[in-house]
Length: 155
Image (cartoon, rainbow, N blue to C red; front, side, top):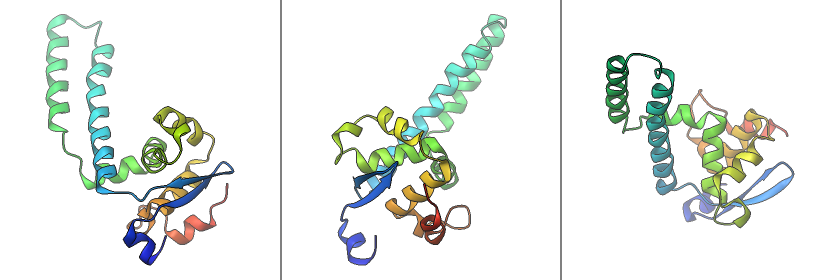
């Protein structure tokens, strides 16, 4: 998307798995949702720790859980690096794609349906196409795919 379209916030399209999707421009609201999702996933860390330590003596379990809670609470902010790392994963690309297409495609109202779609697409293709559709390819540095590289990626 170029020039006036981007400034006006016009919707674009993205073609994935042979299907064309109408997608919204990424907004600060979408990026805030991504941040909240990242933070919510950190809370799951406590459950993972609890499962892994269930056979330890109770006093050790209590110490591990207390440390896990402290770590989860300290992770309520999402750094630029955290965001970049998340958006370079399949999960991050699926989540961002879901934010972009869910309003225009009722059949993709739920994240699980977008994850199912994304699982059929090679990760580099998915990342490149989502980057271009979201306008993120313009903002990425050497960590990500440039728009010219993204256009060269085929399904």
